[in-house]
Image 1 (cartoon, rainbow, N blue to C red):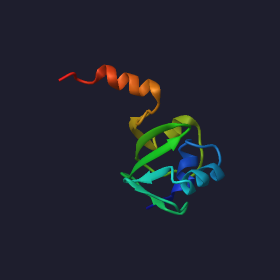
Image 2: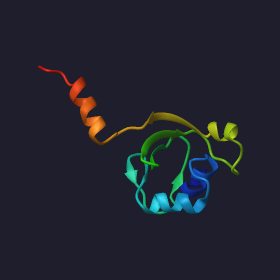
Image 3: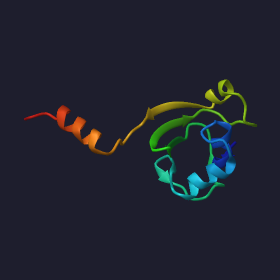
Image 4: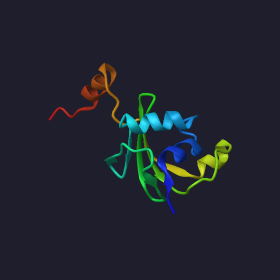
Length: 105
């Protein structure tokens, strides 16, 4: 089985409204298995890897299940597992940290 990406994002509680999920997809801020998607009707299924750019942060999650509705946070937590979070930090603070941790040789 498969589920529309915009519905899944709402049911998994990444966004509050389906319109916001649709906007994320249309802006190119969602990738499924490293492929940028542009259609909100794109299907997502278990074992897909999603890369989401939300609120200036990047989250990488693995889809574990589909949902029938938006439920409480506890039920949304079983829909995915976090693979990585806050990747690709940019700006002066990140550059300063990279300079401090870079090897000298």
